[in-house]
Amino acid sequence: MTSLPMRSLARAERARSLAGPRRIMVDLLIGSAIVVGLWMTVAPPPSTGRGWQAGLAALIVVAVSVRSLAPVPGTLVAALATTAAWLLQATADPGIGVGLCLFAVAERRGARVFPWWLWLAAAGLSGLALVMGGSTAQEALQVAVLATVVLSAAWALGTRSRQVRAETAARARDEERLRLAREVHDVLSHSLGTIGVQAGIAAHVASLSREELRATLRDVETDARASLADLRHLLRSLREEDEEVPDSPLTASVRSMVRRLDRAGVGVEADIPGEVDALPLVQRQLIRRVLQEAITNVIRHSGASRCRIRVVTAAHELVVEVHDDGHGATAPLREGHGVTGMRERAALLGGRIDVGAAAGQGFLVRVVVPIGGGERR
Image (tube, rainbow, N blue to C red; front, side):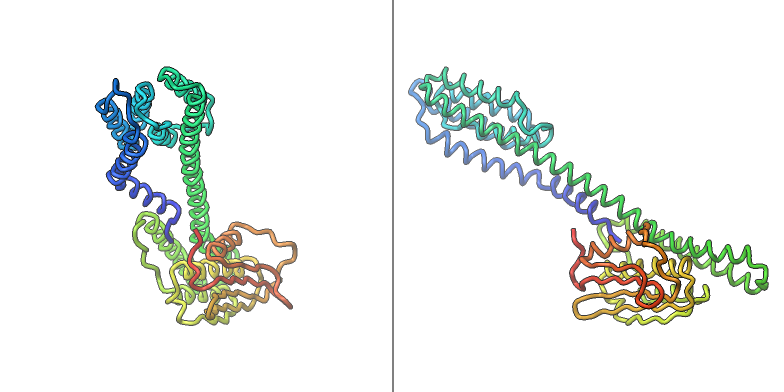
């Protein structure tokens, strides 16, 4: 029972924090490539000289390198250096360095994909710089349009990246809430339901002997302790994110469920192969939770006298069946939390569940999942 969505997010955050120096090195290489390709290949006017060009190019490299740490200052430095280079006719860069820094700003603060001020600022800055730099009107228009496209695309991509991360985090929180609700229901509902039935018998059946009453109370105690143990197991699995919490053998849990049916006066025929204990954890948990929910429903709702439990581990699929001879579904089945939880567990493993009246008599719960498919993210 591990928290896959939240664990994935936590690992991603740790990886992001560890990748800080590596990202700075990558940005340093990208900034250097921009300078070599779009700055050093341009011959500045004699009045400008290579010294001014090299100094402004160094500012671009620094701004791009620190954009992950200080995106806003990096964007300002890159914009000023690029504008100055345009004025001095010392670069052919249409704002790629500024766009990389602007992308980092949008990743942190972007709300709208295409804000009006970005278009206006990019077009105005590009046009002003090129006109003052002495370019022809056609060249000024071309470079202004190109710079506007570069900066707008950088902002849009950064904003979209921020939105995707927010949507991923929200989806992970929703999945975590659903998983917790399913686990708490599975852990507590079947035991508390059985305890309620047994307590009702002890309270309202006047013909119970002293020994029968004591046996019923012992059963209540056993189920309560089992529920507390399952709850502790669940809490441990939530706290220990980096390793699996040891799980009890599945065959032992099945024997405990069979005893519950016996105590409830339901005859049991169980066909559980010993190799189920060697199945992956998620599949063992599926079997355990399906049997718990189905057996609880047999005790509480079916009025059955016999119940057949069958688990089949074929070459490519796992089949879990619980079939009772009770009154079955007398009306269209309304799925509660238990059936919904079983359906979600089966879907996570790429399987399916059939719940309803059995052919002939009684009620059937049948779950089929592929073996070795793993859990879908």
